[in-house]
Length: 114
Image (cartoon, rainbow, N blue to C red):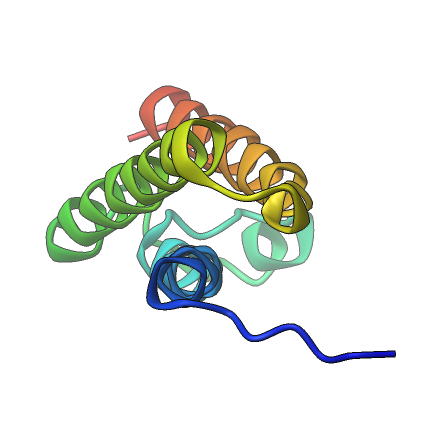
């Protein structure tokens, strides 16, 4: 079976897909450290105070990261759909999953307690 060589455009689309997912993983780390802490019953029982607001710097970077990941997903999906070859159509699945995960995270950040 002959190996197919990917052109520069195919490599660019693959790198955009992997880069979008890498940005989303970094976004999840920022989200984890910036969100308000949960007030469990044991903490209330021990009278331990917890942070009830988002950390402002983390919140800014969480919004920037989720919008960046969503932008990369939509841009790469459009490029795959319009200019991609048949062997690159599998990227659409990963890009749609990235867009859905980014939208869900955006809604979670926006409507969670501040």
